[in-house]
Amino acid sequence: MGAAPASRDVTSYGMGLAAPLALFFLLFFVAPLLQLLWLSLHNDTAGLQWGLGQYLHFLTDPFSLGVLGSTLLLGAEVTAVCLVLGFPIAWLYQRVGPKLQTIIILIVLLPLLTSVVVRTFAWIVILGRQGIINATLQSLGIIDTPLKLLYTQFGVVIALAQVQMPLMTLPLITALGRIDPNLDDASCSLGAGSWRTFFRIVLPLSLPGIIAGCTLTYAAAITAFITQSLVGGGQMLFMPMYLYQQASTLQNWPFAAAISIIFLLAVLAVVSVFTTLGRMSRGYGGA
Amino acid sequence: MIMNRRSLLTTALTLGAMKAFPGLSYAQARPLVFATFTGSWEEAHKAVLVPAFRKANADAAIVLDPMLSVDQIAKVNAAKANPPIDVMLHDPGPALVAVGQDLVEPYPVEKSAYYKDLIAEAQEPMGPAPFFQVVGLTYNPEAVKTPPTSWADLWKPEFKGRVGITNLNSTLGTGWLVEIAKMRGGSEVNVDPGFKALEELKPNLAAVAANPGALATLFQQGQIDISPGNFNAIQILKARGVPVEFVAPKEGAIAFKTTIHIVKNSPNRELAFKLIEAALTPEVQTTLMNPPYLIVPTNSKVTMGGEIARVLAKDTAELKKKFVFQDWKKINEQRSAWIERFNREIKI
Image (cartoon, rainbow over all chains, first blue to last red; front, side):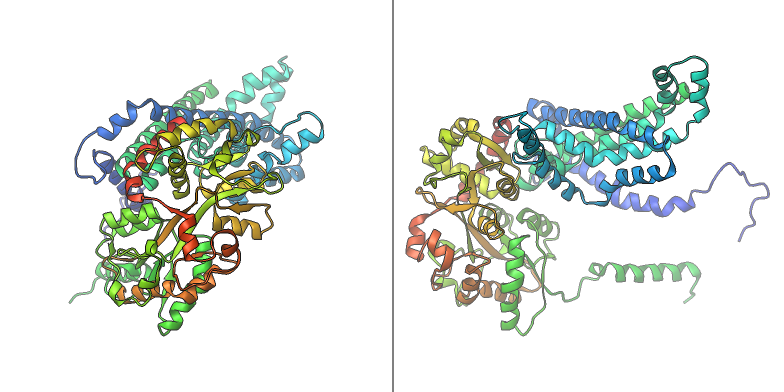
């Protein structure tokens, strides 16, 4: 046993404690990912012939690119809805008494306590032809024939926004909680109106929370296989369903692997845009 | 031998791992694993087939591991030499894939006591068909007053925005498209007329469901009033009080063989054979034909009764007349191209 160094650098930490997790990741995440990459670099379904054919097929096919584009767009729409609806809730949370805070946090967390499948089926009941929305609108005499809500892009966005809402609200609550309430008062006493205070003080300071929330919501929304296929139906094709179709129904694993790699890179690109924005916001907040 | 702390730890970890992942130690007997389908299939097999098998085989150990056909194939493919499944259950498309990939053993026909009693269409040497699945027209009798009689009724203007179909991921969706193509002069190798017909169906289409199960829920929600549907699935919905009726169209109901196979290199070959034999017996098939299961039998010694006799066929002769079987070998050749085409063309 060697003696501990006399003067240990207190600003550095040993990596030993992270080793078990690192090993776990290496075995169950990095290794399968490499296998996926290896598989995607084959031109035939048996995986014998090397080549970039699968990638070429995807990237030169307008239909496949369309699926990728609509999936990324879907994520953006869901994220925007979550942000617009989630921000006021988080803002309210910081300004009410402890009792109401408990209620708000319960409401925010409640969706997380039921399974995604159950929540999605609830949305089928709500959006259906004889569902809650159509029945209400019809009984109020606003519409004559039921609106088509289920199996539309609108339906998918609304259902996904509800399902993923906690992922946006929770980081926002944390971020808004870190802002010193005196800053609001200071801004007001210096003559700024409520909107000016909001845009110049609250919004910039809550940017880290917004970025974190957007990243989580976005990643969850575009990969939500269950909600996408149940509310979107069989003719609305998004990347997870496209992947499933190729891998499972058609047993075309190399193409499915290439789709996953491309999807992964596209998502990484979007997430890195968010992170860059986050880094910029840190400079902004400190200025 | 010197025992130091490190080697002791290694040994302990290894032993621990063996305990935690028993699959690491290969040479051990495991119970017979039967990969049935999920849902009503699993219920029926757990309640009827498994007890019958255990009674005939001195309470032999058996495990049901329900999963989709494609998952069964993937699992067996990943460990061909030591498959984790002994008996597979397949729809016609995946069955041909499994046979083509050399994953199943020929059924020991000469040893079988029941194989010869199966109706001719169910006698498959690579794995017999103990059950049929039947696809016909499903409708909501509260909204559709005159029962439909033909596939062509789906195109009637009165069903504008009321028709549901599934995409081609499912056996039902693909089989139905082939049937529509045949109705308009096409065949298993030429589904162009089917796609043309789909194009004309668009004004009537209310939904393209991702799978047959999702289609069923659309009846419950009043989203659709008429669709192609699976006889069994409809009976289950009906039993739960959903207003649905099944009718065999005059062109013939589409029959899919559900085949059962012994997996190649199975360590439980003999028991696997016994399980399949049990599935072919008239006793098991009769029980499964009665409510609540209503599974169409394939053993010609079974006397048709109940709802099946009323809606489908009174005996094997009538069954042969009313059922349409499709050539899935030809369908499989082009299925991926059709799925691609469906993806592109069917947008509502």
